[in-house]
Figure 1 (cartoon, one colour):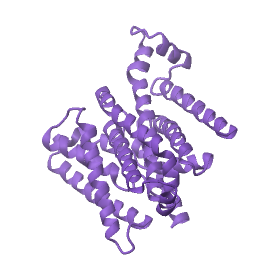
Figure 2 (spheres, helix red, strand yellow; figure 1 turned 90 degrees about the vertical axis):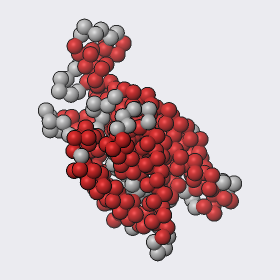
Figure 3 (cartoon, helix red, strand yellow; figure 1 turned 180 degrees about the vertical axis):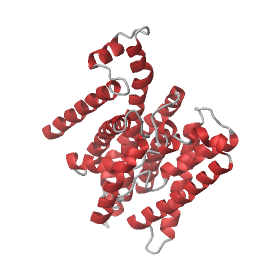
Length: 328
């Protein structure tokens, strides 16, 4: 690794640690950083500030780190695999598919067990991915970046309409999911984290293992084959990683749009086109980004708190428009 990469990596990790500390310290009640450190190293349940830090804010910060890193890595893999700068789980419909599957399963079948949530989300994301690629492939010219985005938008709108219709037909059953569908890190069950963690771990391990080959794949299928890459197997592994990371993220926080679009492009500004560097940088930057976004969601309209997913869309949509204008 070059000296420049090492410096960038240290700066990124330092920024993530600072963002994590700031995230835990701020909120409706500002807690001094000294008290935060004390709560983490010498927890005392009789001290109210310690309870706030350990029971409420620390889990939320951990959720932000895991979800931000997962969605950013998933977006990086999708962009490398499809050679599409607009690819990410939200735009291509995977977030909506995973969310739709969870909502329908909970709303109509009452399946509330956290153990099943990541699996249901993964099935929804997988089916949606197949539908999006099938629709794009059937279009004139095949699955180009434009047709993938258009088919993703169509499937997203279709599933969103069915979700809204189900909500209207049975508002009582779906009321608890209303806020979750906007993307939120609050009120999440710790059990969801533990059941989602194996999915995140597996997805990350695959992503790091195939990162070098994704660099070759990003140059084109023929080039990758010439370099000894088994393209079909690599794409299957990459998609498996994307689905696992997306399903775990949706299980924890609902749909968080545009994180997987913005962060990989920022990572490339620092490390270039090598996915052995893009993947870890995307993970770190994604975690930091979602920590900062969640801080903004709590503070911008305080004491009113905005759903974190709404803020990611507000920040990511202009970036998406810029990419469309620059690349298409």
